[in-house]
Image (cartoon, rainbow, N blue to C red; front, side, top):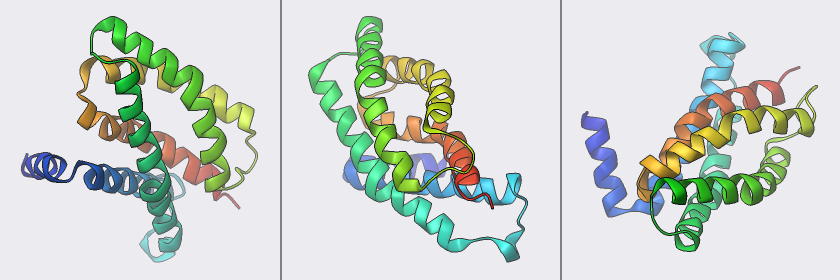
Length: 165
């Protein structure tokens, strides 16, 4: 509860900075989960540089791009009715998501054994329902954080697959 209040204060005071740090932190957390829970590296074999790289990608690429996109989308389709949320989800999934994935995956690196087509198929199953709920239920200032929380699972998977030996 204390962390949530601190996060709300940070968002109110510096929304853009708080969103960037949120995206970076959650990308890094995805990598830590990948290394510790999936790959079972243990702390002594943890690749700190890899975690920092994923966090950097979140702060420098994911946060600015997705956060900026949500602001643009809210101007294009103002409102938060069910129909507005549906429209936003369609525009997001039909226009933004393919372009974003086409940029994000090369930034992270070549995924061992998994094609872009396979990644896209997996992502399509996850994101439309998340985005529909996000656009309908979540105020603009919290949308990036909601998507990044859901993305921890995706980030964990990406980190694991892109760093397999």
